[in-house]
Image (cartoon, rainbow, N blue to C red):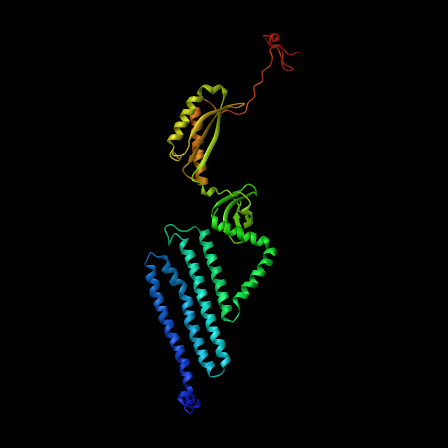
Amino acid sequence: MEDLIEYLPIESVPFADNLWVYQVFSVIFVSLVLAYIGKILLDRLDKKAHSTANVWDDALVTAARKPLWVMIWSMGLLWAGQITAAQMDDGLAAVLDKGQSVLLIVLLAWFLLRLSGEVEIRISDRRYRKKPVDLTTANAIGKLLRISVIITAGLVILQNMGYSVSGVLAFGGVGGIAVGFAARDLLANFFGGMMVFLDRPFAVGDWVRSPEKEIEGTVEHIGWRLTRIRTFDQRPIYVPNSVFASVVIQNPSRMHHRRFFEHIGIRYDDIKQMEPIVQAVRQMVDEHDDIAQDQRKMVYFDRCAPSSVDFFIYFFTKTKDWSEFHRIKEDVLLKVLAIVHEHDAQIAFPTSTLHMPQGLRLRGEEPAGDQPDVAEEPRP
């Protein structure tokens, strides 16, 4: 080590000439200290933020952690580079000055992008909010914020590099017209996606269907260009967003109740039992725990069908879950069948009655008066 020190020609050079070297090492040392202090402060702020019910401070601290660390080291290295460049080349110093401005803009944009992502997660997660925003709205807000940040940061960087922003905007306006004609379908899908995000006819996880387009399934993803729907037989359907602007979309997931509507037919022979059966079924519906009693309920004798006399049952269940609805439906139908049997009636099935004129007999049938009292012995 002593030989290395003797080799270095530092002693022969005045201290003032070596001042920039000490400045470079000082900047690097200060950057190291600031990075360490920043880490400690962010750790403490993170613990403090987690102890509060506010989700915004959590998002702010989490979003600032990496950009702050990169900013401290990058700014320190740029400052050290400027000190070194001042001793060598003025042109390099000017480049580093512009690079410093661009770096600050990029770091600020990075922080805002991370912040929008953290906010998007926290406003749509039940762990952070009692009443979270639905995932579709949160994704739309996050995407719009990120697009705005990227466009703004790009324009500011171009202006700092000496380009005319007004010229860029004018070129973009003229080019936008040409692109609009060339990409009409793409723009239609984009604005269709905007309509879905703003109007929110459905969200991720909803069961939707469109009889016009034979679309039915669960929404898995809503993008800017298309929406992915998973059918009940697990086939993915990719629907361009422009389709939703021209078709009717049903969203059964947003039902408050499920409707039960069935006809029950009994035999014409049991017509006298119709009134007591209807009254018993009506009482059963009124007393059923799974039926919404605040909704319309009807049990009435309805029609005389070709092979039965029918009454209908109409009500709404409390649940809107599909499998739970079928459990309730099964229970109600079994109770209806039991009521019918309790009143000594039977469920009708399709039958036909043939009325034959008196004296008409089938081929091979002996007349009623010619039937012998005793069967004849078979002839040998």
